[in-house]
Image (tube, rainbow, N blue to C red; front, side, top):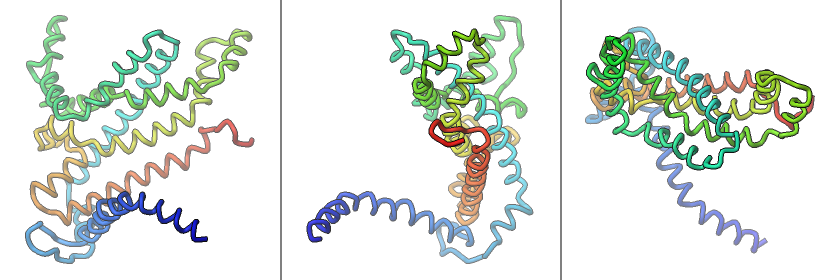
Length: 297
């Protein structure tokens, strides 16, 4: 018994730094944020309890809140499926047994490492400006370009293109999933003369469904959290005409620009609930299209 306690004590000692950091840097701020969401707090005076006022104002009188939801949902609906399609397409190309596949993996993964950086967001703003590279290329073909970022009807699509460009992480997960599909299934299909599209529809997609589900959940969460590109490209304003005012940019401005920390905390909890609902929806629907190899019929 003493030896068991001694072994457990040494384990808890190794875990102690992580546990202390988890409770002080994660659980603690989460609970404080929940409390502040029911207060009026400007980061100078003491928080003043206001009950549900922040949430009532948010859902009944804050028009910009609904605009941020519209912009964010627009981004999520387009960016998530297009990024997954791009990632799966490139993964299938790399799964052909190329000799320099390691080099190609690194090249395609590089945008995922750089895409969230401030430098890439600034570069993106220059590419799609009125005199940027995109319009210069279009001018070669006699096409008059527009201000892609300054036009409210096109600005959100520059963010979506940036998101698609960052397909490296889901691509690597898809590639690992493709390597796990038994080759004998494709060999049997070849003997039967099955067309390539039929093999993709009947073998690849069903066998890859758990990986698709995993990537889908991760990408939904990441898409709702988009911040740096929208903040940099819009100069922190969410403009033009709030067309780039994604949820996290609005939350950041409320907290650190207007110092309405209580209201920003309420926004953060609503975002948490939205992400939780979408994740729960994904899990609830997964039983209809995700099948695992070892599950019983």
